[in-house]
Image (cartoon, rainbow, N blue to C red; front, side):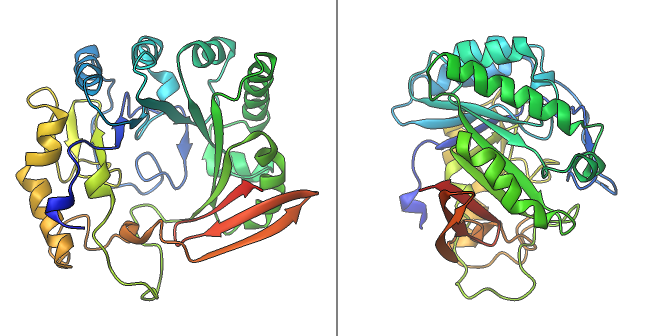
Length: 319
């Protein structure tokens, strides 16, 4: 990938509506134990997302819009207003990730009526004891009940949206729950993912050099991450805004994406394979996160399943 091949618009936009969270997951890179970075907790002002949506509406290319970030989006008081406006933009694949604790009937109605195309759930396993240990302040029974009500409501509408995704962090202590987790959620989901466990502060996915060669990180060419203050970070790994590239209150997303000097410098360094002097990138393996390592099929509880493995996750889809 070269500078000449950079597309005009990002294909993924993260609107971090809030970095506040109702949980304190032990290995969360923002709220977890041992986190040393700091960023004030807050909620996105209306003018930030309204300006962003107004711009995106004019773009000619499709965009995946995620309304989550370092916090829980269902805490955001203006989420319904945002989703309603975003849902009117036909080119958007609109959705968000949630821990599911706050998914009450009003939220379910908001999702079904708001143009939300997908919802991703962060649920760590099927055992309440281990789940609630790693996800402090969580209640797995409540979360599963909430999710099942959303599935039932979707079914009553005879609809395939929102598409559902489930992600489990692959803590060594719960990896044996993988098969049960996939069997539980894949029948009603688009896919299930078991993410490689990374300790707090780590962006490493392997201990030894991989078999594949370095490539420029795809996130630099497809993603715009807009924090709750309007500041744009380098990528989704820049959760403390260590490498800001602009602010949407001062410039358009398109201008930042194409003309930020910082972003240009990082892209050029990646294209030359010289990332050792780049804060954030020099100890990050995410550039190789989606390179396929293995693909195979299996049967789980009479369900044909395809498993695709990368350094960052194992992904399961129905056959």
